[in-house]
Image (cartoon, rainbow, N blue to C red; front, side, top):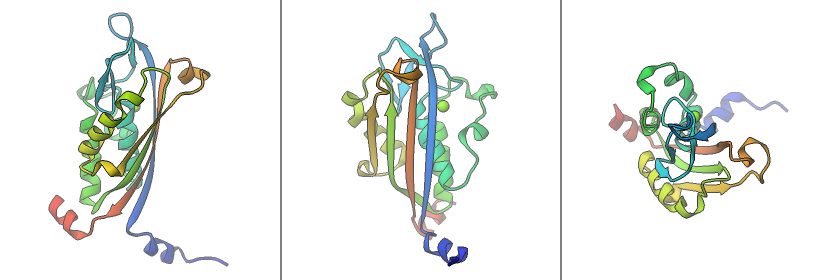
Length: 186
Ligand code: MG
């Protein structure tokens, strides 16, 4: 049996799902290497290594931004904020996220819930998970209960496991906020 595509789209009109992924190489911080200060989820961590990146290298905010953009079918973070643009050199990644949130608001969507998985050996995420969750929720303009964070290791294998990279996966569900939110954004 073949189901109608129109019927499926109509049923799902109030929800959009998106996936985001990011990986940054970790190197000694300046002046010994190219690593930037270790910023993750908008928080500064004390670590001898830092992410190599054109912006501040915040892998959590990059993956969250890409998940949101993907959910509404917009260009990805690299297309909107290319690493060839000097204006983004060292850029605070919350500006990318604010842009993505403005885009979903204009389309009448808000955050339903978001699930973030951070994979790295060091620094340890656990002690600062609550703080990061609060910060990400604040940046998204949603309740903390809509944001979940998980920290995992890579069991010592491959670049992530050897502490030479950090990896982040994000899944987000957007829900229609109705025409009111859309009108407010305009
Ligand atoms: Mg990135």
